[in-house]
Length: 612
Image (cartoon, rainbow, N blue to C red; front, side):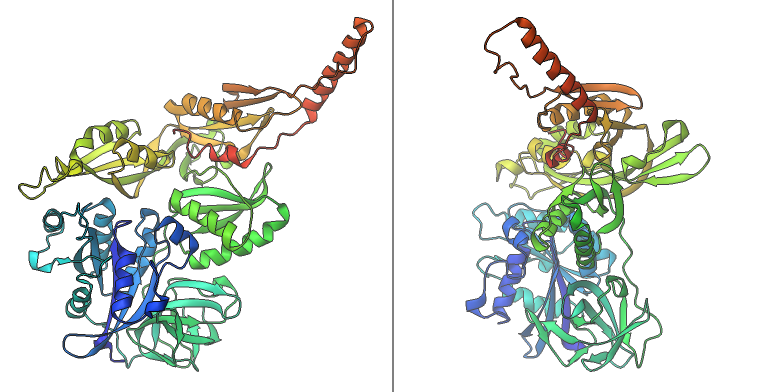
């Protein structure tokens, strides 16, 4: 196909602003999906996505559409996630496009993730088409939202498009505007073949399947491909496009989005960001790949049954192929055995990965409490990165510690500014700026939630404060109206110490945590109190202690289960009863010295919502 008749575009928006519904209308209008096969959120294939109503993985689909000039165009759409934890998926999708639809809810207006995704698209120099969705809702305020878009992003009034994705009103006009406004791919059809892998998955029969954007040249399904980073070569098992499911084709041309089944079995042989080329006529320079993303939250994943260790490793490697933002490394814990230390982009990302492991690979997983990585500067001048509290060095060896900081963008109705500032003050944050997103004159009283306009606030805050139930707290303070976006903003020196948790006088490594010095006693008491209600009673007393070094700062005791040894005594001298009680006392003393306490999974989850 002539690259001049190809358009590659993405849909970006805040979560729940109607991306997937708009994609459904495009599939219907272009006839890509038969009416009897159509269902809501068609591109969201995972059960998790349908249950939660969010997009987790970006999806590609090729559609044929006849423009107003009578020419037929191939429109390659990549639907993207809206949650902040999956912003890496968005960046990978945008790198394979020339333009993007910026979708905004007509009732909710601009949210934090709207701003973040728009700036990300501008970084890739994409053409943005603003789309105001859900204009059919009774509470919709398209004029107010249009004013916000013009004020924040500088769009002109004639650039704005209005649509009801649910009813389909205006969807056809958007497709025609995509053809008109978004440029065609710039690659050369006559050059040596080059294609960038922007996503991939593993298939038991076809090996690694790379989702590619062909930039230059063309390739046939009979050719042999080469991975430019590793020089690995393989015969193409299958070549195809998404129409909407995997559809085999004979040739993939420059500018197209499709897939290549490589047959590779080792996940290290072909990964996201690699460049594929023809092994007989290889290109000289690879395409600019993706920058590896740094994980923000770390947690240990362990199989509940030690025999499932190899299965967990295999499952994580396959999942990592499909989710390039997941990092894994082997780890050993005295309490939990062999497992893996995994890096995630956020708590939602952690939750989704754990659930996918349990559902897709039938594994029973124990996840430790999430924590962040710290830069520890030793007195010797050496700098080490601590991702696990277990490896926290002795305090006498530490010069100072740096913790990761976040730059937060919060968008809230004006009446909640005081509540948000109060919450941020308790989170060791620093105020940067505040900007009012003005409404049109006369719209101030249009709804209770926007009675005083909307405010965008920016703060810096330690990442460790984010993973202690911050999201739930800010939603509670703002009655659910707040939207939140964040990005890593370097490291900053802070007074941090390690809290050890002792169960029956034995330290449980997986429950250790690194906290700020001023909050240590509060966290220690809260955690010990929650563990007291989680750890089951034994035949002996179980002390639960929180300590800093050798100093215990909090303690609770799980009372012993008492057995009535006097039940069989129905008379006789009192010495008989004393003898039985002494015997029981000696047995419990011996049991306490050799007994081991099973720490249930719920105990580790208490660390995730210790502030709730």
